[in-house]
Amino acid sequence: MNLMNFITRSLGALTAGLLALGLAACGGTAAPADDAPATNSEPIVLQHAQGETTIDAPAQRIVVLDLGALDTLAALGVADSVVGITRGNVLPESLSQFDDEKFAPVGSVKEPDLEAVAALDPDLVIAGFRSAALVEELSKNFKTIDVTFDYADGFYEGIEFSTHLIAKAVGKEAEAEVQLKEVADAMATAKEQAPTDKTALILMTSGGKVSAQGADSRFGLVHTELGIQPAISDVEAEAHGDAISFEAISETNPDILYVVDRDAAIGQDGEAAEQVLDNELVATTNAWKNDKVVYLDGGRWYIMIHGVDNAVEMLNEATRGL
Figure 1: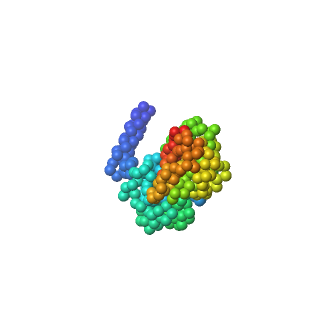
Figure 2 (figure 1 turned 90 degrees about the vertical axis):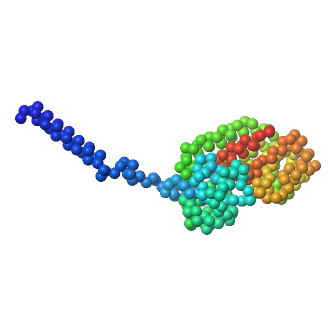
Figure 3 (figure 1 turned 30 degrees about the horizontal axis):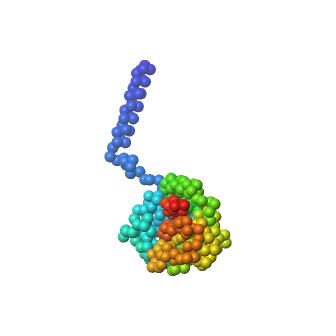
């Protein structure tokens, strides 16, 4: 056999062998590629306000005990992952999509129904702020995270923390960056519009009474972020502020009055903030005389404060009409 014939026969045998292998691979005994087992994703470690929680995959059955977190979930496009929510007397208008029977009620913020939570078989429970005290107990039975932050550490920084935490839990970190950019842009615009040469006093009305709110309170961003000077510098950062008389409001004489009606925010009957403040003493202030009394949306400023979409609306509202 000459060399050329040897090469020709060898190549022919090799080709036939490869063809046979190819036909076998196409036979009915081989498993389709789509049926190949998926590789498991890495566990997701969530660093939250009270520690660390690990979940196996992005959460898809979420019970929410904090309405700010609910706002953020909606903004991230995962409202359908929510299976249960806490309900107060009223759900803020901007969360009306959750006023639906498919979102099971699980009690109140401070007293959730643990049996109702368990019945929903959640893969994550999100708590925070008013419900933060329940995290330790909840964690005994459910994967739980706490989105609480200290307003004194910065409004944007807090929104950033809670948004990143929630986004990581649901696998929407890229979407979170888009939402946070909107907050940063709204912050920049509000700072440009804020009258930093003026003084402001933040008031909350409840049950006909009035309290002053300081720079470190949940409403303090008008001072700490926007740079409007506080009319009173030593207000305690208590949950509901310091009680203040109409005489003190008159003597302080702020250029701007920011007002939150707590009763309206929580759906409680009571005298409206406009009526509470409509008296001769408050009327002596520059704010009243110059029509610089800003009635803030109680649902946004008292209930949903730290929601990422809500934060944009708060910043827009803070300088509206000034």
